[in-house]
Image (cartoon, rainbow, N blue to C red; front, side, top):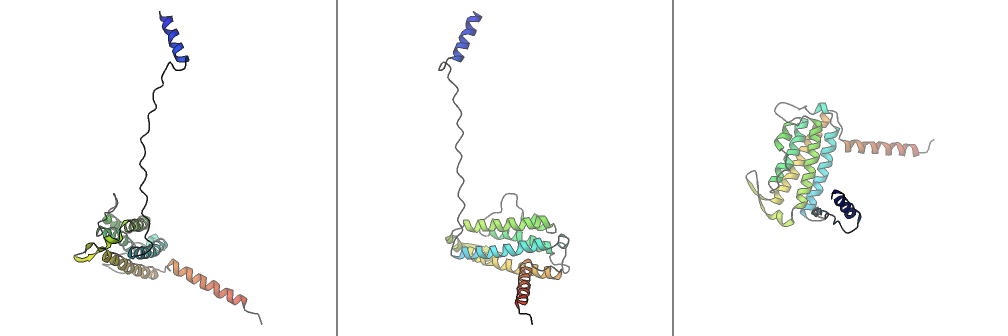
Length: 212
């Protein structure tokens, strides 16, 4: 009896069609990622994003050029240090966006950013992340959103008005950071590049002058 059972089992396994394979489990279809919003080519948002890109380049390059040991330097008591100014800008980028009904990403705490201003590596990264988030957030807005009312520290304005305040804030602290750099013997990288080009041009013109 046992031999007969084993014989039938072997035949069933070796004969095509007698054993029906288990149906393969289908993987759930993955949802396609939502396409990123395209940056506006014209209008107030486009002009603002151009300003943000300018300030991002200036701030991040200057923050990287400042030596780590200078991040705790301050010109006097009661004013922000080098690193605290950079951290204030990074944290401010997130806090201004709240006035546009845009909350910081999960895990981002503006107060923690400001508290860690004397750490160069963390502060430089915070600057880069905050500018990237601002670019993304403003790109995702609609032009019609700019007419919505907004509250700027108790002052009634529009979302467009908040963008003006952001640009002014960035300009104010870029000038401050440049002054801090100069006081510590650090030439802003873009100025150093201009000086180098001017020197090379002068040297080239001198070499081209006919010898007596």
